Amino acid sequence: MFADIVKISVKAGDGGNGAVSFHREKYVAAGGPDGGDGGKGGDVVFLADDNLSTLIDFRYKKKYAAENGNKGEQNRRTGKSAPDVVIKVPRGTLVRDSETGRLIADISGDEPVIIAHGGKGGKGNMNFATARRQTPRFAKPGFPGEKIDLSLELKLLADVGLAGFPNVGKSSLISAVSAAKPEIANYHFTTLTPVLGVIKVDEKSFVMADIPGLIEGASSGAGLGHSFLRHVERCRLIVHVVDVSGIEGRCPKEDFRKINYELEQFSKELSELPQIVAANKSDIAAEEQIEDFRKFIATEFGESHPFFVISAATKKGTAELINHIAAVLDDLPPVKLYEAEPVSLEELERKNSEKRVFAVSKLDEGYFEVKAEWLAPILSMVDMDDYESLQYFQRVLRSSGIIDALEEAGVRDNDTVCVLDFEFEFIG
Image (cartoon, rainbow, N blue to C red; front, side):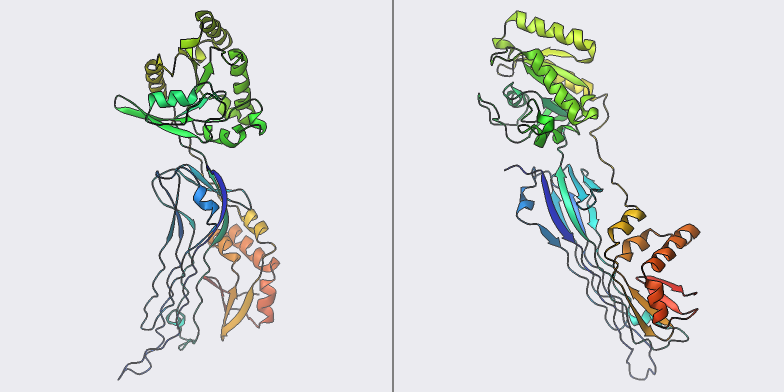
């Protein structure tokens, strides 16, 4: 089974809690606080794996979670950080936030990509000793790891995409010019999954994809085309394969127009890709049929659509076609990669508007803590040295009711307020 769209949930590990501890050693009086910080929670990391070609494994396992960091220890020892969870996906997988549709990452390179960050460890009581507070009997809990519902979408990485109606010889062509061995038979929809073939020309090589199921109405969901058209989007070049013999009673000219129409309806950008025409099954076509189709292409498109007469079954003309493709690819941009979309403050605020749960507590005289998991991504984007950014953060605290709750808890001017890992002096 070929699976190219799935939904999963990932949860990074929480940071370990800070420790409350006081130094105890013979002959050392008043050793002071020595509780260490908690360890970092594990990240959720995605990594491209060329041995995978489908997302089928994610149909059966939907939830992935990293371990939490260990709590801090005495003698100022930091707790052990948790290992990362590495999720391997096929190269070319797009990772999106399933709630907003925002693109988080394009897993097309060799470097691992952190999708969900583990929480930082909480601070131990060694961090809270001051001249006023010499024996702090509290520590900070670890920060929660990110939890995200993801949508994974596979868009194959191929230099060349084969377009054309079923049974025109796309599978035969890719089998003739590469080591790929797709299923080939004389009936429609023999190919039910995209097939990739690596083609070598001298010292160069490129990847060709046989995209199945293109028929009239594919861009609207007819047949299999709607499911697989997305795999052509990354291609640098399209080879349009046409059955020039018309042996099945179809008109090559009409077939050519209909496939181009479907490509244009699915994606304007896709329809504007360079295109090479491969008139296949020439071994069973009359010379008049080939010349009539050649004139049609020349009249409609001029020199913008190079024309090759081939027979995938006998390999006639395939070497010339492949050499021309390799030469054209030298002048084209690399395979399309998608840029991750940054999250906006407005999106964060909207996403968390109904989840603004928080707790205010007084940990010591003049020291208050605010627990609010939803503030973590907002706080990470706020520049405290920028006046407008700081004003935005203050508006969030006010609109969410945190300021009111602090005042009810007895906060006074110049008291210290800790929001997650950010401390500031309260000014009413």
